[in-house]
Amino acid sequence: MKILFHRITTCVLLLCLAGKLTARQYLFVAARKDSQLVSHEINVKTGKLTEHYSLKLPGSGGPMSLTQDRKHLYVESQIMVKREKTAIPHIVSLQIKNGRFKQLHTTRVRLRSASTHVDASGKNLLAAHYKEGKVSVWRIDEKYRCTGELTDDHSTTPRAHFITTDPSNRFAYVPHTAPNVVFQFTLDPDKGKLKPHKPPSVNGPDKENRYHEPRQYAHHSTLPMGYTSNERGGGICVTCWAV
Image (cartoon, rainbow, N blue to C red; front, top):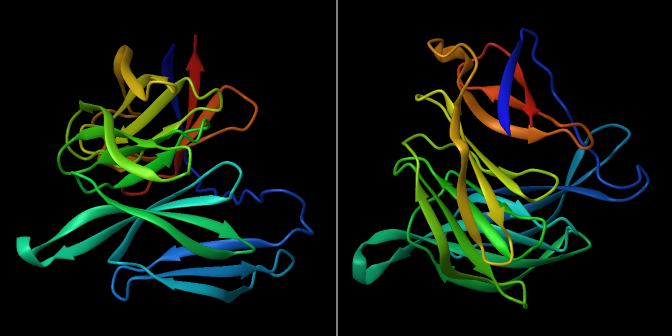
């Protein structure tokens, strides 16, 4: 399987609403400065946000990832460790009910992440590390706690912005900006292992044009297609999977 890019010159904002329009929906925000995790209820008719619930995190807020059943949330938090005189990345595991959070577990991890993603099995938390140019997989146990156990990691190249799995949960994609590439892996969800795909990476659109470097990635829900947002503007790109 390889990825082919086509550039769209107009910008598109896509809002995906989960479930029925009559169901309650929430927007979660993790703040860095005041370490608050805030839930806002969305009025699906007007788009208005109303603050619903907040929880004090043990450190500054960071990347978040929600399970497919929307019952558990994983938030990276930078916690100051006094004996080391520095902030250390941790993963906070939370349960969600009626838009309210309950903290289940906090564990230290090795590297700070630009993006995290819970795979469809709910057993693995994948992470992309921007500065180091790495991807990691941490285990999630049967009690929905990220244990911090590193089941796999791979070096890519610096500026790894994002990580996600495809709808089949067989593949993982990691957009990188300055190299203007997307790294691609096969995923074994039972073992929590990634394997570089063939080829291990593909060029982004307009290889020499920095305005079209891939930053985030979203999959189409039914078609073999996805979309990348571009780092410095220039719209979005359609990604076609070629088998």
